[in-house]
Image (cartoon, rainbow, N blue to C red; front, side, top):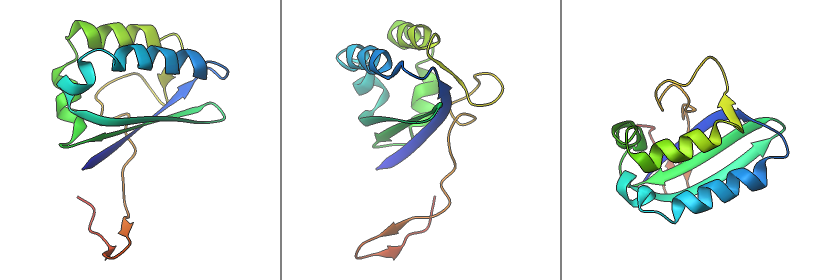
Length: 113
């Protein structure tokens, strides 16, 4: 299982609308096409954290779907509420947190890929 954490800024108070937009998008076939198994959204003040769990690394799959009309629709709708943490939108990799440590019960410290 791969976990991706996208970090951005959001308009405080827009959480319900962001959740509604994702619920609508998640009801389409887009998550399955991209390979998303789980999506969780978090906020901390104006920081937006988007956790995606997938069978394979999400970055390449998301990048390959940028021209998909369903992807473009959700991206455009979210532009009103979510902005890049720094700079402008580029690749998913540029907007993602970098994992540097992992521990699992029964396994201990696990090397980070």
